[in-house]
Length: 214
Image 1 (tube, rainbow, N blue to C red):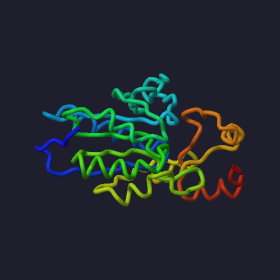
Image 2: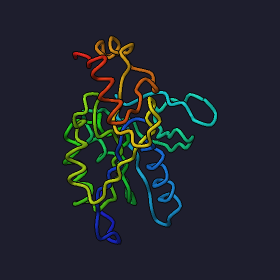
Image 3: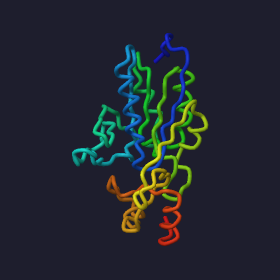
C-alpha cells in the first residue's frame, strides 16, 4: 500500500497505565473521533495472547475480546486478532485509504512492534495509536512499551483508583497470591484478576506476600 499523499506526516501516540486505568476507554474515544472524521479509516490489531473477557461496568456483561476492541465502558470496534510474535502481519491487512492503525494490548506483541510502528508512521505516513500496560507485575517495563513511549510524539499515562486504599493515583498492577499458581502454569487469568495499586499499597503488598517466582 502506498501512503496517502494528502497526509504529509505520520506519528505515534501511546496510551498507557496500569490495569483499570481507562486505557481502552481513551483509545475508544480516539477511534470514535477517527470514524466520524471525513476520509479517515481505522485498522485495529490485537494480539492472540491478549484475548480475554471484559466485564462491562454499567451492565456486568462479560464480552470476549476476540476480533474486537472492547472498553469497559461498553464501546466496541471491529479488530483483527494477529499472532503476538508477528506484528508485521499488519502490512498484509493495510488497505488503500487506511489512515490510522491501532495496536491494543500492545505489551504482548514481541519487540518487532517497535520497527513496525516506525515504518507505519515514517514510510506510510499513518497515525499509529499504541495502547498497553507500561509495567508488568514486577514493575518492570512491559514488552515494547518503554521503547515505544520514547519513540512516540505523544504519550498519555492514565492512572487508576487503588483497590486497596482508594487513592486516585494507582500506577501498578498487583496480582493476588491466589492466582500465582495459574500464572506459573501459563493459564489464562480472569479479566479482573489483576488489581490496581498505588505506590504505597503495592510496596506494602510486596512486603507482605513477596512476588511470584516465575
